[in-house]
Structure formats: C-alpha cells, structure tokens
Image 1 (tube, rainbow, N blue to C red):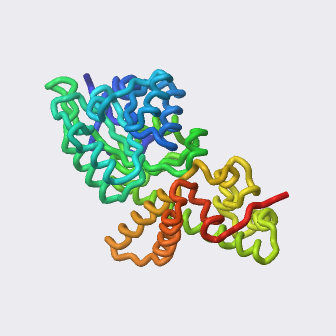
Image 2: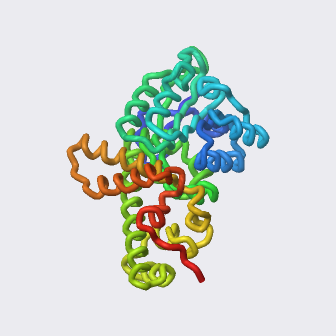
Image 3: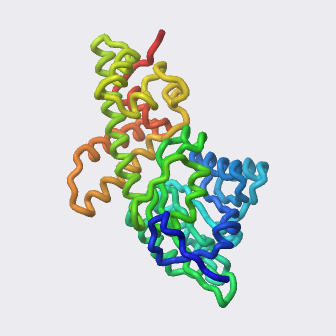
Length: 338
C-alpha cells in the first residue's frame, strides 16, 4: 500500500508516515487506562464520539460502569494494547506511568504482539519521565505483517480545565512529541477537548502542564488570601469577587472556580469542596515543578511556598478535598451567606 505524507497545511516535515487506510479507519479502536475523576469523563466523551473503547483500571467498579456502556474490559495493559490502535493513559503519578508501560504485563511487554500506532499519556508527570517513556516507545516496533514494520509514537498530552471541562469535553490539551503523531491524533483530542496546543518535542507537554499548575496554585492562594483578608476587614466575598472580576485581579480562580462557598454555583466550593482537583494532586504537581526547577538550576520561591501550603492541607486531613479548600482550611475563610 502506498504511503502518503501529510499535506503542507499542517506545516509538517515528519520523520514518520501513516498509510491512508490507517488515517481513515484504523484509529477507531481506542484503549483507555485510568478511569478516575478525569479519565472516566474523557473516556465517556470518546464513547459519545463513536470510538470503539477498551478500558483497564484497578477499580473494578469503574470497569463495571464502562462495561455497561459497551466498552470492552481488559485484564491487563498488555491485553488492552493488543486490541487498540491508540492507547490513552490518565494516571496519578510518574511511577504509575512507568509501571503501566514497562511492568510485567505492561503496554510494552509483549514484543511479538501487535502494538498501537500511537500512545498518548495524559497524566501529569515530570518532563524527564515523559521523555524516558517516549524513548522506550520509539525503540519498539508495531507490526501488521513481517513486510510492514513501523515504529509506534508517543505523545505526552496532559490536560487543563478540571473535572468540569472533562465532563463538558472542553479540556485544553498540551501536547509534546512527534508533530505527525499530533496531527494524526488531533480528531481524538477534539472528542475530549476544545483547545489543542502543540508544544514541541517529547516532554514539552508535561513541562507546559507543570508550569500551568504552578501558576494556578499561586493564583488560587492569592485569591483565597485576598478574599479571606477582605472578610476579616468587613467586606463580603461576593462584593470583592465582583470587584476582582471587573478589574486587574481577575483570573480563573476568581471568575470560574471561586473558592468561597456561596459565591458561585457549580464549582467544588459550593459542594463542600468535593470533586474537582484534589489538594494532594496539586501538592504532587508542585513537587514536580520544584524537582524540575532544581534540575535546571532555576530559583522559584513561590513554588516552594505553595508546595508547603498544599502539603500542610494534606497533612491536616484535606488531601482529597478540592484544592480550592485552601480558602477554608488554611486561611480560615468563611462561607458567604445571603
């Protein structure tokens, strides 16, 4: 079968090529590993977009839910890989990613098996691990016949937007890896997200994500501190929020994810900080940012301070609450009552 390069409208000069048949038909079988708060919603959107979904998770309850929706349940990552054209992982940590890819029954375990053409890791992990796993993937072969052998490709594609955006299919994807793989996988990303940003080579998506979450953590601390101080000075959080959102303090933490219970509906602060992005995950992401900064010799005092605060939240028993609970449990801010 003749091979074709992508047209210049993508602006590519790719080192890899896909056949036209694969572009049009074979990327319908998606494997998904990690059905937590974010992954389950992303997987739901893939089903809604008509993809054939196979799933794996250590949570049997999550697997039952997706089995009832028509997804095929696989017992191991290796088994899932054999039936998938593209595999997406959404896992809690770097060690989880390494294990799912390289463990005894991992995605790269069986050298003789048919491999996916593209691996996508949407976990938030350090750029170094993303680059390590990408190198491991690129050293593998995916075979359909002995005469046609190709290297699979990997994209690191962490997300931003939280559970609400995952539910709505409006996530932002920050993508690192081969540009041809990004172009081929873009329809899959658009089934789960709205803003798809190519960031460059392997690990750059992960680098973008930890920088984004560093900025988010600091903005949430700043908004929470200012609102709690305002309450102590006799201001209502609702009034202060209106001022912030119409002036220079406006940010996502004030106008879309306000941390004060009673100010905004449909966000974790209005639901006793349940759901959303757990404080323990923010603490983890800040740890990744701190580690990455040390590796390149970059000073980041705000990262260190934010990491201390969110780690203290976890130590005080609020690890599973949404990270915006810093308003209540660190700054002792009060609910807004009408």
